[in-house]
Length: 116
Image (cartoon, rainbow, N blue to C red; front, top):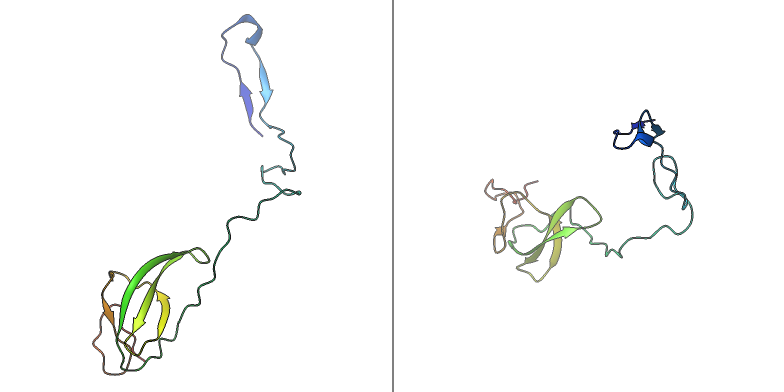
């Protein structure tokens, strides 16, 4: 607990000290976090299904958008594959919109490409 010492600005505040704990009430615990009723639920989140396998073989895809994913602490990319499939993947470093990514066995080693 902190003890707050007053600066002497008037004779009444000379040698004064106050216990630093602030009692807010309103359903908060000792750390100040709301633990009782009336907690907010936050903003509504859409769940985006991420393709971790990237099992589209020998078909290249184009990065259309880069979005923030509120369900995880990461950015994700929306990919349009050449065969018409559309999926989300985790955003590879140093890739920008309109980059192409490949997945397969004979693809060049580049950021965003997926090898088995």
